[in-house]
Image: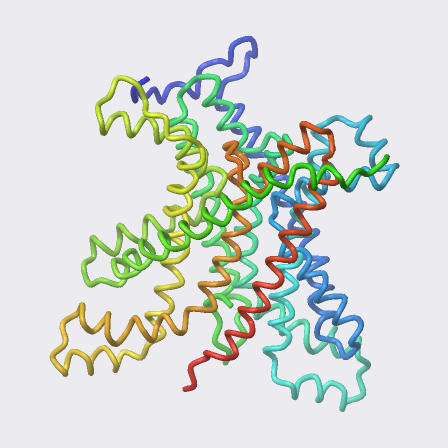
Length: 246
Length: 227
């Protein structure tokens, strides 16, 4: 087999399908974006809560938050994916029963979202904690001094500032999340990378298939970069140096 | 559901072989990645526009696509590229294990490059100027003045990246190479013992990575450059 490139291959019909190869890739792209979007929401909500908790004065809450972050950071994502798909349902009978009955794609979607969402939540928590701790101590003390409760100090003083500071590092976490979603192919989720390999296997035009997938990922990365650059400029806190990761 | 953790002790020699491969892959990829990453970083910072654009393009490309896709690229296409280069009749068989080594070196080079670049740029410009003023060449200034200091700043981040690499090597599963996770997964499927095997793998990774990252934290405190 030589490099006999055929870029028209995307518009050929899949044998017995009636769909074209490009439709295959597009459906994969939707799964990539869908899983990433839902997992992103999970990661942001859980990550913000855990990250905030780690800056409180309660030693037990801090310990629990730290344990959460260490747990998800020190196990490879692939192994976590296997744990979610093969192991955890065995310990939760109702979930197991639902998986047996449900459409396989739905089960893969749900478990991939949980896996990616919680994995990313640990990383978001780390950024949120760093963001809150980067604020001058006087802000918390001043909030207390004017008579705010702890919740109010977080709600009105610390968090609005911290979130504006952590947006740049969160951009790169979002990019990592989209890239990591490709690991869901190991549990059978038909996302973009899965579909491009499938197309390569059907047609033996691996080069064209992988080029298409690569271009899509690059376009996603560039778009996210541009959008976030605008957002960063909008939310930048005057007088603070923003930009640069970590 | 009955658990049978005996499956682990029964398959320990096979798992150990997989684990050795994981460690080898991590070691070779981090040394190779560091070497090419340094070259890439120097290229990115070089005054030559062409050189720095090529290096930046490579780094940005590698950083914007998933590792799984990079593994597929190399796994499916390297035999064909090698055939084109060597001009043989059939694509040479290099195997998943060796493909993985090459892939990880190329992939990690991009990440190490960014760490190196930040490290080199963290050295005050005055030091470069002083080196030139003393009559050192570019190579001497880099080797004797800039890189030793930059390395010291970067060591904790490089080690953290190596721990991430250690975890990422598990992805060679997608090209069916037998690393630690791959070995466990093969036993798990053969014996129908997914729960025990994957729990064991997770515990081993957790203990190792947690200990290593704790050690890096201690080291970081110790070697921080005082300014």
